[in-house]
Length: 245
Image (cartoon, rainbow, N blue to C red; front, side):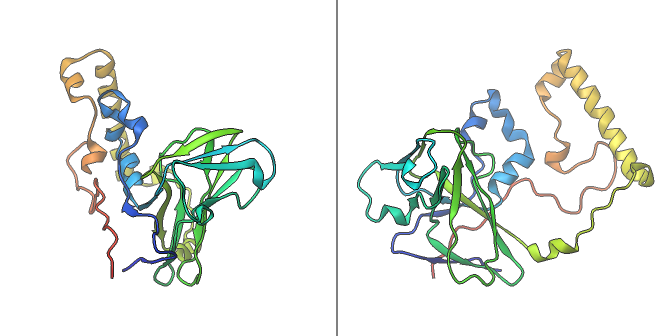
């Protein structure tokens, strides 16, 4: 399976596999958020498109295109081909610089980088049918208040991942009581007892528990008793870098 990336100009932005690191996660004691596997998996399940320049974007709060201004760290030719005020009401439009094509039934989910926090501006998410679309899409962000934000060179402005979206219509949500699944209920109750006891010992300052610091059942793909391990468990994503042909 291939994700085809067709550059729209001679110097398109760099595309790299999603990186686990986030500045706010680094700032925690012992980098504790990295122990949350769902966070790091989300961060790395896709590809980042990186800003080629430092650019500061400012919105006055007005409703017009000219109420958003851009200041680059150095002169940039054809800057409108990278970022512009295409819409109104504080919306900033980036051009990823590629036309993407996916296999039949697969689409590109385009958003801001997962768990990448930028104060004052919010990414808008789009699902794009790249299995037939013959032109590129844009990545849009919207200011949440008047002010100024900066993208540094190498900072992602777009994150793309893939989904087999046409099969979503076949999914039937079903509500069911856990009592109808005795084995699953037993596994949950066992985990709940282990979790409650671990947290109680942690709060009491138990030395062994303090050294352990956190339970690793989910990270290791285990359940807290003897039993079958998950058929498949992934705790590190290894996406392929772009290949040039």
